[in-house]
Image 1 (cartoon, rainbow, N blue to C red):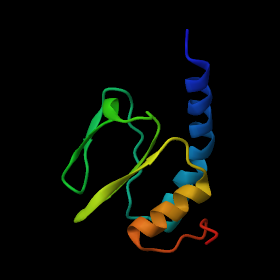
Image 2 (image 1 turned 135 degrees about the vertical axis):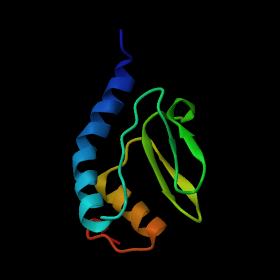
Image 3 (image 1 turned 60 degrees about the vertical axis):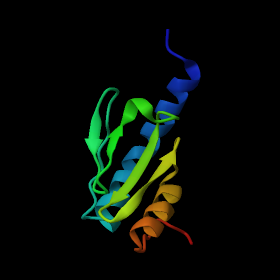
Image 4 (image 1 turned 120 degrees about the horizontal axis):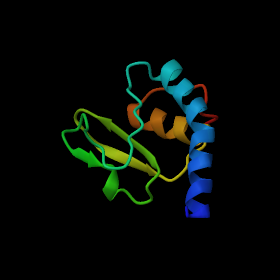
Length: 99
């Protein structure tokens, strides 16, 4: 049987994923957004390797760019929270960030 709290977190993540994908496409067109599944790993632009098995909590976003230390946004993020964090990390404006 699945963990009800984990299932709720996954549903919240999926709820915000589509607006976040649209923010990335519109405001950060040269940024790749990938959804990794359990057991997958990925080499980040900063040269490190990300293994999703080691992330806690298991849902979140990792912002990475060549020459910068990556940043982990843990847990479910609203579209505005993601947009503001990405704008600060990539040093760009995002129309989805109210600040």
